[in-house]
Image 1: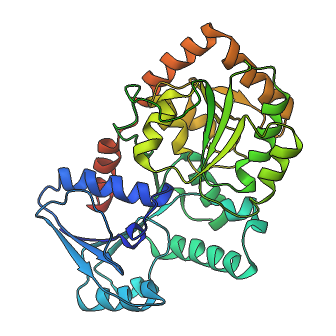
Image 2 (image 1 turned 135 degrees about the vertical axis):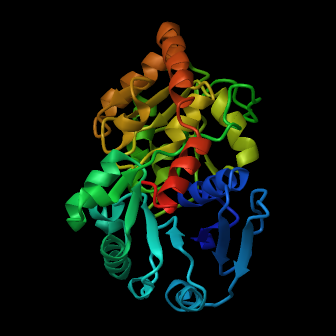
Image 3 (image 1 turned 90 degrees about the vertical axis):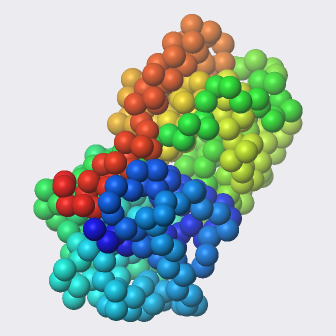
Length: 360
């Protein structure tokens, strides 16, 4: 088969959720391409790509604006593949006209429904439009969790039989062997975009409230997002400036060590389509505190300490338990390692290839 993949999201210096997903899938497919030929569509050539197979051809198609709906759409008219895969859910407008092309797209979350205030009115309109268009235009929709699949079906009314759940994997670089680059020998860690639905303010308040070892710090890594500015002010007001540290974006070569060296990974998010950092922490041998909401119980299984993310006292109690109770720490550490080992990118790539080939 000729399989086209939109890899335009990889033209960024910082890989977060959707970019990491595309990268890892591409790496897995390159490792085992079968007899298929892959056409990799991009607006800008990515600075880095995983090692590609000889079955993979990069199609660099520069265009400044509306790349998906003009330049990619035109390419599909001229050289339509047997299957088009869009790892993010912005499907070109003209795919219904490509009668011989099978369309597959991935839905990562519907956070814009849970937190519409996180976006401008125009962004909300666009997200709603493209999500509903994906439901109309795609032959198969991949959801990264059952929770996301359920949200998508409820919102669009799409036939559930067209939705396939394929969980993410965990990169092997996340493992307990790494040395932490942190100057703090004892710390808890959060990694993710700094925005309100990640519930970082309550996490900071819980840390200030919790009865912890005096040498325990809280490290907060992540790119600045919507309404993140008040965080430092709140840290100062709570009097924990010397123990709570905003790291900014953490590159992979530092992230592996930070994950492996943490006493606990704290991820009390209000809404997640999957929650990849939870599994990355588990694979690193770090016990996890996470929420009872959205996809997080599905992803974490029985290997995390769960809290109501709106209850600051509950988050503080969980922090205290993992900081002071070695038996709980050891139990969750081992459970996490076992649980995370069942999530591999090789499995994710193989199941995705089966969908692209029309086998699922």
